[in-house]
Amino acid sequence: MKLLEGKIALITGASKGIGRSIALRYAEQGAQVAFTYLSSVEKGQALEAELQALGIKAKGYRSDASVYAEAESLVNQVIADFGGLDILVNNAGITKDGLLMRMSEEQWDSVIQVNLKSVFNLTKMAMKQMMKQKNGSIINITSVVGIRGNAGQANYAASKAGIIGFTKSVALELGSRNIRSNAVAPGFIETEMTENLANKEEWLTGIPLKRGGTGEEVADCVVFLGSDMSKYITGQVLQVDGGMLT
Image (cartoon, rainbow, N blue to C red; front, side, top):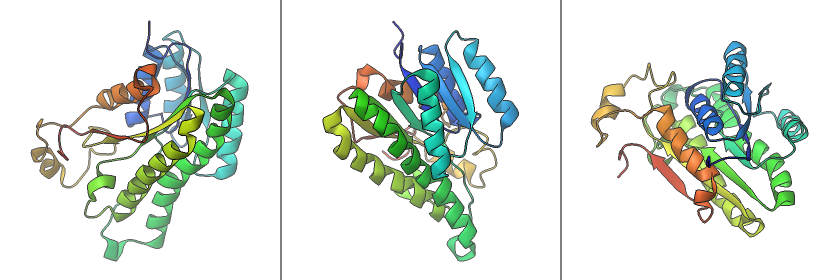
């Protein structure tokens, strides 16, 4: 029996990086997968074909999760296309790094909008269906930076810390409806986003396991939280960081 057999999942920002790894792991574990992409159209279309080749129903949607109306339209369309929604994975995110003294208002606003408001938008829309079903798992991708902060990433850290507070609040509000809300906090994961990080070596030396993680290792944690194996876990932040914040 596959861990996500029969479950319908929506994953945002899945055309590359951690989101792509999650979508593939979900398909391998039997989930039907709806996912979003925005700028990476070709990658999104390629992923849809790759997921379908694994023998599950999959569909990609070009949608901006940070725009309220688009989020509403997306969730309605997914429910119409798939017949329900069991798991929401809020993964879409961007970075616009810079020291606070040089950070523009646009750099601040865009990161908060994409990383934090998108989680509010999608969760608010998805919870209606989950409340009807009296079942659901919401999984928000945060970051160790949201727990400990990071110089040059005040905007990103604030957005990711906000996700943690939001996750715990939703767990308290929706627990009585059998809807779980958890967050996953990746550490240093080898993706396109971390390839050009200035202080990469500094990060790696501070990790007890002495290496960066992989998208698949984050995805395994997200599979666990989406599955019935975690049905008594809610309001938690699971760190996938090689012991970085131990």
